[in-house]
Image (cartoon, rainbow, N blue to C red; front, top):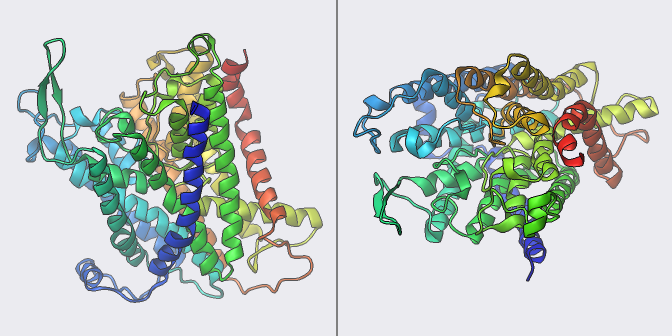
Length: 557
């Protein structure tokens, strides 16, 4: 069996698994977020934090709750990182003395994990202690993912409800999503990874003798448990510096498939929640179809560009294997790269800086799409719904009538929220990249020319979209880069969330508008094609000049 055929079978199994997740996991998610009963553990949590679980919140209160929780999370994790040398910890660095994380790196890391970005400007196994990795970083993997799902559910409630200012209770949503969805699935996934060979221990590590007579220290730790939520929560922060290319994180081909499935299963299931909550499953099918079309196109193109072996050396050896693990090969690495950037995961199993020019462009373009195919947990659904709102607005202009989506008018207020949402990330990406080049901070790169420009563009695209993957080849652990990328992550996460919740509040307050002969059906192939077309056109108009200076210039010269 050749590489292309094996890669195709690998992808077909993913497609089948996504279909199952959409139906069954989607129904389970719906029951969790729509339920009204609280179990004993949840009631204890609500009592401890002083929350009335049956009291609902307006969009403004919901937004303030999200921001308050995230600020506390950020400050707590920052303090944890700065004080790790004073807390009981394994391993001990530098002969028993734990390093304190630098202030700018602690800021960057705290922002990164709080915003579900998980950008890493450090080597996990040599910088963070086991306690920080498990009780600091992994905890944020859970709760930052839960925040994204909660915001998506609040937006769907805005579509489903009418003449009300209530969008649910953030604290209830956060608690239920964490305890009933993320924790149990992560526990099962961690056991599967352990069975596959992933490490799970409190060990400081093991010193082994090499074949040449030297010695090598092999780091242990709570790897499998962090790996599970890293992927399931579309986080991406790896225990080891090389992330999912490390055999202790990703031991075999089947665990590689499992990790890709984990990082995509909840995002592909969320449209089912949308369809059931608005009372029309056809709406969910339409949204997941948009996600599926974009995902399949991206995965296919990434594989084609890498398997075609563009370049002198790859052509000579018959494969673009530089930077890829021989266990996974070209196709499984390319599929992983596409999946991790189609979601907001950032986990990697290969060195994307070594990809062919056009192959490396695809992960970059995936993030520029807004990571909506299927996107991050929660973030993918609310991102594609914003694009759907823009689509019905454009369609309404074409026929000269007020646009409607699911019985809600898309007027000036709604389109302002949607437009500002779409413009936030491109502004952060382009302004940040320009600032890096204008201030001379591109000199930290190993490469210049189009490839060097791509590295800068990729860094800010990854940060502003809360992805976290890196093109590498660029030193970002400096005060300027840590600060700038931290700001991009912070604004790229919370400005869109506030706008989404504002849109949800505006929709929920409306009186439903009966469908008429002039209403655009939003469950048909025509609507699916319109959403795909408008999204691609908007992204092309926004980013094509930047892509032309980077990967396109490198790949076509």
